[in-house]
Length: 386
Ligand SMILES: [Fe+2]
Image (cartoon, rainbow, N blue to C red; front, top):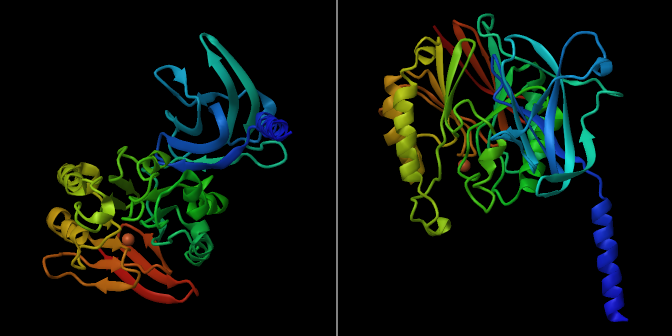
């Protein structure tokens, strides 16, 4: 009897699983939106092949005709995965596109035979199709952005801070590290902050990541970078938009690599050496040199006395001084700090607290940074003029 009940239970559970429909579990969200391309990412509950259908932003119905498909594929093969990452390229600058993401379950692949299951897609029938607009560098004279950091999985606070920073009117958003306290799973990444970001803006507006020292911890830490495409393909990159060129840096861990917390599995000194070598070349690029404002985004500030902070100071600051950085925006300290240039750092360092948001507007002559608390009060303001 016991064996029969166990068999029945397994049968029912397996049966339920087999009948579970394919669904989009998280996303879609935009990454690395440029003049000619954008990356769109989403996840499904089961293995699937995936594509994005793209339509112009005209008055036609999405169902007017078959729209061009962009597949998640590598080496000529469609990817079969629960994580779907599709780069759309050869787009026209300054153009609004409508899109639908689409997945089809792959039940089995044996030899040359593939068996497919159900499909899942974003809604273009009873809801407006999702949209994005490519960048037009020639026309982008002014930009605005919002920066939050040290959310540590408090997604309600993330929503409040984004609202206080008036994110709907900003061009893009920076997540400056420690968005969760560690990276144990995909589920944690989304429940901690990305589901909220998707709800609020990320389907149609891009966000950019500067990794904090907490995203480096946990079994999922190695996988996490796949979920965030950057302009360089690395976790450090240049992002030039309008009058500002951002140097986004990855500070790595805060303690020495040999600390017992890392169990001998990290090599961040070596990583920051390679990042310094990249930075030395990046600041020579014409787009960086010609930008009216040069802003560094990095989670840990170059002070505080811990090893990681000391590395930011010794490996990056000399190059950033040489590059004539206007301001560095940090988090990590969980308190507000506005440190003027001095002590070998030739630019002000704004440390945003874990309960405030930075709202910024930039023209070719003025960079205006406001720090706003979770209650909506202005905590500080920095205005840099050219
Ligand atoms: Fe931190």
